[in-house]
Structure formats: structure tokens, C-alpha cells
Image (cartoon, rainbow, N blue to C red; front, side, top):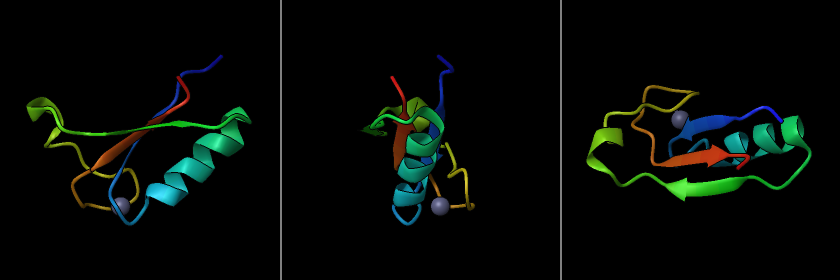
Length: 57
Ligand SMILES: [Zn+2]
């Protein structure tokens, strides 16, 4: 199965969840980003810093 990871800010978390759900047809895994190296990650849908990463792990 294809591995999907989408970074998302607070605003776009539901969009990210929807997208992963639609692509994988299973419930996605959602993790809060808290490690230093990931703090500069930006949202896949806007320019805000990402707070969550949604994957199909
Ligand atoms: Zn966003």
C-alpha cells in the first residue's frame, strides 16, 4: 500500500484526514508534531506551520 503523510495546520486537519481517508479507504493515523526538527514544517494546504501529521500507517 502507498504510504501517505500529509502535514497540516489546525485549520486544515479535517481536510487532511478526509484526503487520507479517501485515498486509502481506511481510518488515518493522526500525530501531533512536537519534535524540534519538524517545527519548521508547513501545512500542505497553506503557509501556516504544521501542527499535525496525518498518515495511513
Ligand atoms: Zn493549513
